[in-house]
Image (cartoon, rainbow, N blue to C red):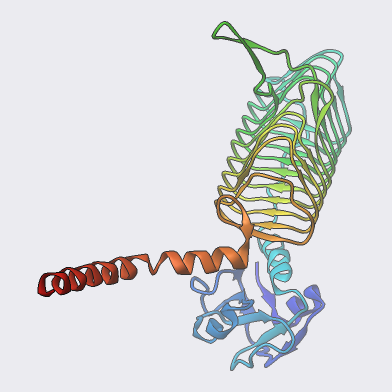
Length: 341
């Protein structure tokens, strides 16, 4: 595929500067990787480096630095870049048929324009919405409800009675509705507590590869609309997660945690169970949250503290080596002074 700069500017509803009528854009790439026939983008703090890129054209926000090459100005360069990725590399089309090599229970309800690929399993009582794609070796359990326009990749598992919203994406290896970690210990023996609830995912939710959302002991584990999870994320039983949250890789949330809207959990961050986290918070990478959190906070460290306080603490810790050296020198001087007395 090739596009002119004018076509791309119109597609992005942007403003074109330094047009080169003879230029044809053949693809989209990162700042470092892009070549002379490709377009890239930059946002702070990388805007100051974009002039070093070999990209033939750039996407920048209004007011960013001037360049000696074509620039398309848009309000949100990152979003524009995502749109161009879809333009130049559209999703592969999947044949919308139910394969004869798939197992689909007789009473399963399959919507219109659905694809069920070979060796996928759709169990009894399941319902699959219109335009959904179920790839090979995916498993849809008994009485599961899957909404419309979903993508369920190979080896994803949705266990019995769970509910998947519309336009959800389940990446390979994720498990929705595995048993929660519930045991009662008697006389040193751990006895399993039956997990009788389910998982409910809202609309536009994405669950990354090998991530797990446990079914509730009773009731439902809930994930709100627009929440996105990276790979290797774990949500425990009876968690209630609001809308538009981001969970970066290796986040661990134990059971019965309530999370509001628009929170970001950095990689390897975690919480204790049975707490409440408000709205619009950021938990930095490896942050350990051990108590309730209000709204509009940036937390870091373990135990979690305000990010600015954590920075001050880290700065002080880095001086400990020099302080110890100074203490040893002072001890030596004191010892010498005592010997002279």
